[in-house]
Image (cartoon, rainbow, N blue to C red; front, side, top):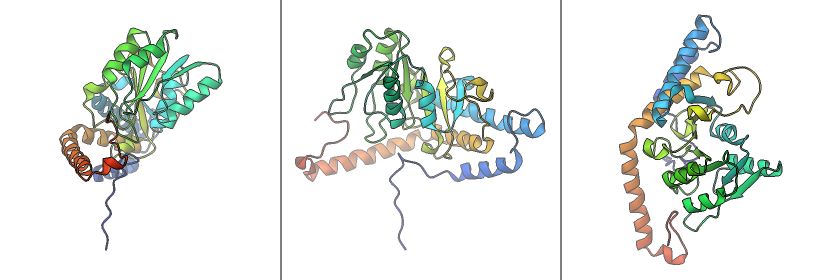
Length: 285
């Protein structure tokens, strides 16, 4: 027999046993429509609102400002689809770059940031790109890159964006639960996906500042305070909530993994592999 070593956690994570258990229980006992006023609906709504509070706690937001979506892709689209002008880079997830290309095709101003070899964006570059754009422009940056893991200087980028009157959207799908919540404090809107946190696929969230609520991307009902129509899956929300609680407690383990990563990178350097052109992601050399 062979034992699988799974190293593709940036693509998706194995669901926690507790997540599977709570989803099964909610599917049996709180399967109603959360928008309904009868007993089954109220039970489902209680589950959804508890999960909303758990996610808000994870990212340092307010539960009223958590909008459930189908995942990080929809959350990014929801945050950006009405941007009058956009500053971003080709480093971003396709759910950001494709929106940028669509906005550009519609005639809206999109400015693409230069990407240095390190993969780390410059706050000065963001400030320069914002010159001449309307004050309602949006800067879209991933907190941690989904391919390289490079962490962007969000505090500095937030400072220059806000100084220009722009809004900062942070794709935090790969960062939430791994970076300290303080690192995300400058975001006006922030995307999260449950399946990156050992939760279920098919559910995510856009968290926004009270004054930065997005315009709906989809049309239909009045769910999610009119921001995102469609019936919320109470079982998926419960699983998301449990995963959010787990992610809050996992910080110590991330430190251990960072040490292991550093040891691996140092060993590769000692083997001389860097002389063949290997470069560590995020390294300036």
